[in-house]
Length: 412
Image (cartoon, rainbow, N blue to C red; front, side, top):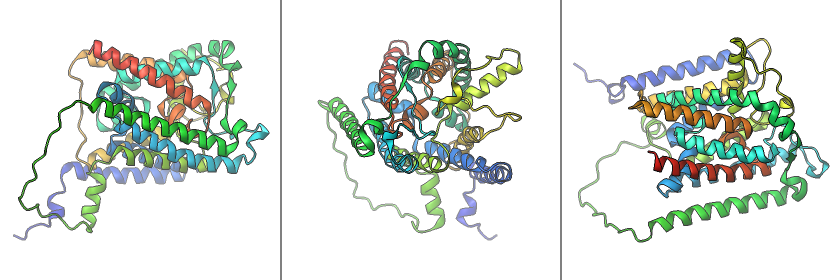
């Protein structure tokens, strides 16, 4: 009997499922292409986002939590690198749309949000909730595609938190948010000054993270790794298509690559539409579902005048470009996990984990609604928008994540 080629012999069930999933992604793309011009763009962006996060294990929670819990800054440095790349790209896009930032005109789709107490409190709640639940909103979405049941529970909690926020939104609008100021750095500093300040702050953050990490390593014993004299194993030809596919789909990417790749996706989608953000669509899901069961929240004051992660209501259909983005994140992570042979259902070991995921999701959801975004929209898309609210939200995230880390240390 003639032996099968190695490429055929190694086509396991997971890889075959991944190839079928790729076909499914293409079919959805073709359907979207015939439905709405924006849908295929958001679908591809979501798929790319989910796949990038899955392969690089890119996680905003890990960036903040690991810095405090294990004094590791590898993930946070990747986030900072992504912010730097996105800042350069966003600045070029916004300078094209608004050549004279001193005119008082703002780039309408950038994540330049009201800045006030709601920003701070939203960031604090979100930072605490994301550590408690084990994932931020976008992180929970891509982990849903990997088979994490706890992430599905966390997103359920996020929907509950967003609904609770919607019930109280008008109070926050009347008493706080409507009077909050909009602070866009180029208005006072021009583009050059705003970019320089942003890069200096990102550089300072990068240095601070590295210092914090080195400080933790002082005094630890050093180890010498013996070098084997054995001959290295024979490797496959790195120029073959199969070898390249394995490097892309099965070798774990670094957080640095993940952060830069996500920044590239953010820049590309902003060129034609708007920066990345997932909370607004989830908020729409929660309010639409509540309305269908007779528990609608009514009109949300001022929501249509705010950019960023706010609900975008679509008459006549439950589907939208934002739906394609969120669904694409789950589908992209699912496909990447199959191709990497990493997909499996991961069921929490005890009831406490379900409670923790749900409670963290509720806190995170309320904070995301109050702060008008999550780590993706109000942080990763806001700082590159050269908006002061992004930096304030970031500081609040750090404090909230620190509090969440202290909490799980005390009550593991």
